[in-house]
Length: 421
Image (cartoon, rainbow, N blue to C red; front, side):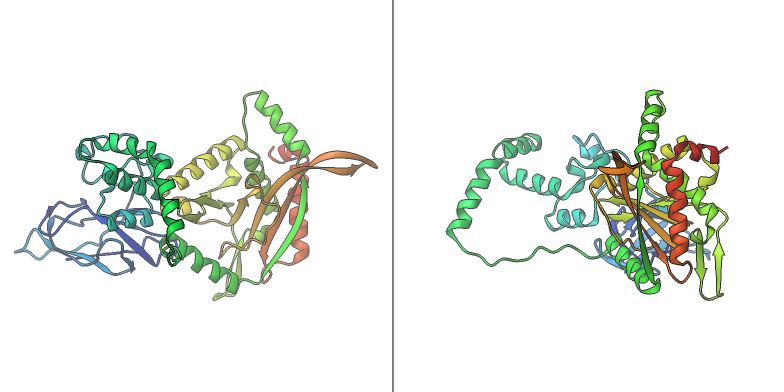
């Protein structure tokens, strides 16, 4: 019986084998986790379809393989009977918060460890078990620095210290080591070798999708600016009433109303059938930066949700994305995507559309600038926006009308509320 890497949807074409939970000769039960794999969007476990014995591990950890590749071979427990094999399915890993690892030997052998593929590779190359390392990243994620720190602390340990004491001693002695390293560099010359970052997993999938979008969709980017002054003032009033609503939640709701007015941007082009499919639901994707690259969780049915619910769901999805806890359901069926890069200092960009959607809008930094209102110079909070769209499906004038409608709602938050009645 061959255990293969199966497709779980969302454009998955390959995955990296992170670790096996079994070895050759192990007896396993049905649904027992066999192997952990990393796709471009999530970490998943492949369970045993039935009871049996592990005969052979075909693919080594750290290897990236295509869908359909056999990972390991099992012998069914009922060796004298004809057993109908059922396909293996993925178990999405809900990553736990790793707070205590003082006694790694007590951890369950199948408990997954939160770490990026490259971090795992570093540990493997140095013969280090990740179970022995305390993660300092979000939700206890083990970072590259955690692994290197642990390796150096073991080198520092003279044999009379516990591992914890060794780590503390290493940190105290770190400055002295840096000085010695600098002196050594000054005394000798060495050839400079470039660092290498593996181009695989999520980063490779992001690249493929960007190339597909860029070379399939004739992109046009429309730029505009939005006066945020009234909305920011209204948001402060809500905070004083203990009703915190993020600015991004207002964006999402205003966009849904604008998409209802201009449905051509809430659509998908089916080139094979030669139709433009206008979607009836409004599922807004949130472009989110994570340690392993960009990912787009989706708020489904925005048209049914209040500002408070949108605000809370956005917080939950972004936290899940950063902790690698998203499921395939969280990533499916987006109809329009936003990229809120303003808090990071961006003032403009030409974003790439999230194929096969029609458009994407990016929100940039809000600045207080002098502006003319009623023939007087006043200070207003202005934000740049950039909207990229598929010119096969929509025209520039329609994009301008769309952003004008969005601006009207944002610049007049009371009008936005009237639209919700």
